[in-house]
Amino acid sequence: MIEVKNVRKSFGKNEVLKDVSLTVDKGDVVVILGPSGSGKTTLLRCMNFLEKADEGKLVIGEQEVDLHSASGKEKLQIRRKTAFVFQNYGLFQNKTAIQNITEGLITARKVPKTEAVKKAEEVLEWVGMSDKRDYYPAKLSGGQQQRIGIARAVALDPDVILFDEPTSALDPELVGEILDVIKNVAQRGITMVVVTHEMSFAQEVASKVVFMDGGVVVETGTPNQIFYHPKEERTKKFLERIIPQDQYYI
Amino acid sequence: MGFEYDNFLDSLHYAVYYLPITAKLAFAALVIGIIIGLIVAIIRYYRIPVLSQLLSVLITVYQGIPTMVALLLYNLLFSFLIGGVVEGLGLNVEVRDVSNIVVGYIALSLFAITSISETFRGAILSIDKIQFEAGYSIGLTKLQTLYRIIIPQIIPTAIPGLINNMVGIIKGTSLVSAIGIMEVMNASIIPCSRTYSFVEGYVAAALVYWAFTLVLETIAKGIEKKTKGFRKQLG
Ligand SMILES: Nc1ncnc2c1ncn2[C@@H]1O[C@H](COP(=O)(O)OP(=O)(O)OP(=O)(O)O)[C@@H](O)[C@H]1O
Ligand SMILES: [Mg+2]
Picture 1 (cartoon, protein in one colour):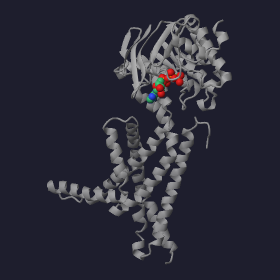
Picture 2 (cartoon, rainbow over the protein chains, first blue to last red; picture 1 turned 60 degrees about the vertical axis):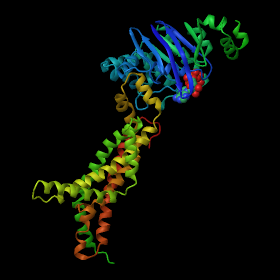
Picture 3 (cartoon, chains in turn purple, red; picture 1 turned 135 degrees about the vertical axis):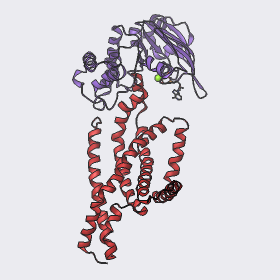
Picture 4 (cartoon, rainbow over the protein chains, first blue to last red; picture 1 turned 90 degrees about the horizontal axis):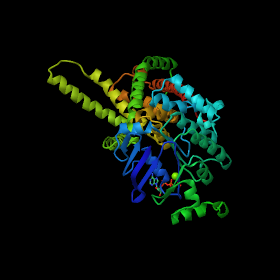
């Protein structure tokens, strides 16, 4: 189980996260929704120490760490239990597709090279990128890069994968196929937290939907509860804007 | 002003003979400059408190001092220092010859460090922050991220700048002739003091520096091609 407790974060005077808490059960697919600027990205980044929270705790399994004052060693331990899929893919430009995947296994986790390569080939096959095995990222399309980004995260076999808008930098015609890859990850039973604006994906795949606005969690529930029976006025307003009325009442 | 071909050959002979000294000075400064310059650039990139600010001030000040002035200053300081030590110990040693070359190495290395660290800093700044973050996110340490991900990416970016730095260092070696080190510049005019015609010596020196620089530039460009294979556009 993963727990985020009472996270606060300000950028200067701008209070971006105001006491955010979140529980993610094993195998959960938690989808975080919310308007632009509500703090979704910042929350994910704080969970991976890419941003230093002002306050807050993170529990992963048996381990609890302080999101503000974790030691270097604790950060490393947490990062080795998690993986991050970036909006802009974040592939290592100096490494081929397969090296991007093996790097975290070999260098960070000390997995023997042959084993790492075997694992990487497996996930490459699974995301349909075996033929691009030795390509550098600069030679791959956005969709192909994100497939590698997802493969890199899955290969690490983490306790949770954090996705920050994994499809919003892609050409519209590629969004569907990448969402399918992510659905596949979910079907493998991997715990995930996904920030996205793709409502149909959320309805279909999420086990839990979290609606954030203005740096707080406004409402949490099953997709059914959030999409069809929202309790909070702010959630209703947001959904009305995002989802066409006819679809809303299906 | 005539040009005596024989004298020119004579000068060229001396210049080439002393090229290893110039090469040693340049290589030492280049290697020290690359190693320490990279460390300085990284310290400044990470804004490591105190150290970072201190380096920034030192580099700004140092860049405002002509290398020649620095060189002459060190030379004075150094002979005072060594002279004092030798006298204090009551030794009877001729220190000038030893200390000159040391001063040459120090002055050129400091020049190399300041200029090369700026090249590396620019190269690091040109790298997308996501490259660091992706490294951390897969569980690499800061150091692992640096040498596995960042440094391999900044090298090809930095090489054109490093070539400029290297050319500057090679030119800089000619300055140490001013403190009496026998290298290409001083050697090439040895025959000239006999004939009182310096043009042959200067042309010989120019030719040797130019050829030396050209060879090194070609090597560096070869390295650049090799290290940037991962980029889309080659050449
Ligand atoms: N590095 C930063 N420095 C200063 N302000 C920041 C920084 N990162 C984010 N912010 C601010 O924090 C707020 C929340 O940003 P965040 O990126 O977390 O929102 P988001 O919910 O992910 O939005 P979007 O849907 O547009 O991605 C915004 O007001 C943003 O301007
Ligand atoms: Mg965001």
